[in-house]
Length: 177
Image 1 (cartoon, rainbow, N blue to C red):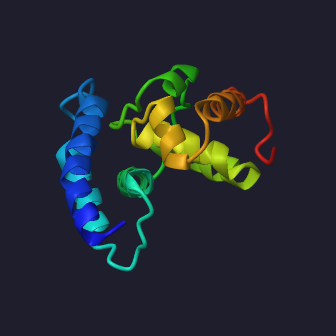
Image 2: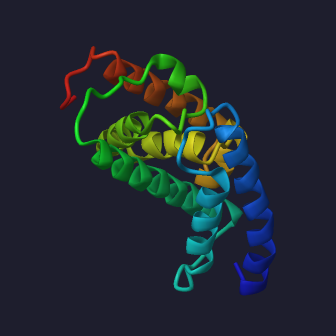
Image 3: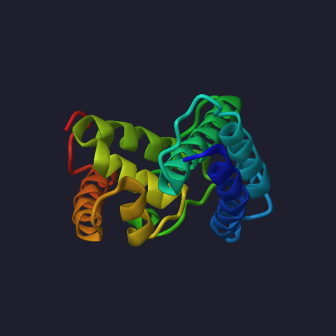
């Protein structure tokens, strides 16, 4: 992509990220300590600082934005959990896999991040699909475009990734499986 094309895409992407963040946070209580605009602004600033990246497509930019948003949320959750210093972690229930995160439950973000790292060791594309779904709010079609695979592939991979994540969340798979 040319720099002009990138400059055209970034403002549009910022608006898309802002809408995603607001929808992710809309059901949150007023107690959460991270604002959607702060997440989007930080991710956007990190994107425009990527001067050495050879952007391939809009999907590539969106994929990197999802990774950045994930890192921001995970770093924030780690910081908040470190401040608590202990306590019982809440398990993420299976409904979380079909919805947006509850971002004021920092333990959920950390647990999903850990599971996505484990899944990535088994199958990187499955982990990327879950990451794009959770952290960028992409649809099956958008995910397929971003990863440059068919929608059929995304649907099948998501079904497998979702089953694996549910099994891990329910404790029916050992930690190292």
